[in-house]
Image (cartoon, rainbow, N blue to C red; front, top):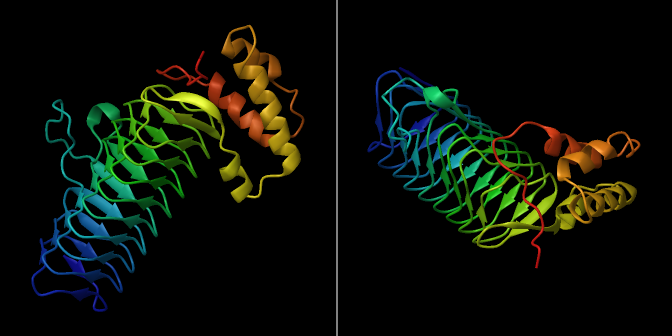
Length: 268
């Protein structure tokens, strides 16, 4: 066991032999930390936080009361194999959040990037890969094997079906049920989420150039309206966007291999 001399550990906390507690960590009342857990520099556990399994938590992450981190996956195929949960730096993990490690069948790793906000009751299932600056609002859930790219926002009570991909900068509306892949910068809403346009607010917040946004809007109309198959239209647009990285990112996303279909606009 390795506990830094600069860490502050409440007398009621339980730390199993083998755990690593980094410099300037703060472990609050009634927290439980398992033997294979590593806390990076400046991690703070407010109180009543339980962290188990092979779990690494990056520098400066703060976890709020009653979060359950690193317990075995909610997968009946899981047989006790050694798999990992890796959480990046400076995340804010709020009350009652659950995050599970990977499974052998899914690559053995659940990985969460840096600078995320995971609000009350969020669930991250096994083998998910989540990027940086992701926000998941209250009680949003990810099924196993989801890929969530950077700067995605997932609204309250939304659910993302297992194996779905959500592209960079996309926004998922509250209560949405996402059963298909969501293109980068797209916005989806609804009981069975349909594409409702582009996340223009998010693009502007990240200071995307006006000409790039205009090019992306034109490409969106060409891709999702009119006759023709989506992949064929995406292939035909290859190389026509000049140096518009936003358009090329969407085309790459559509043309890459996936086990799910792509969310498209409603026919209504």
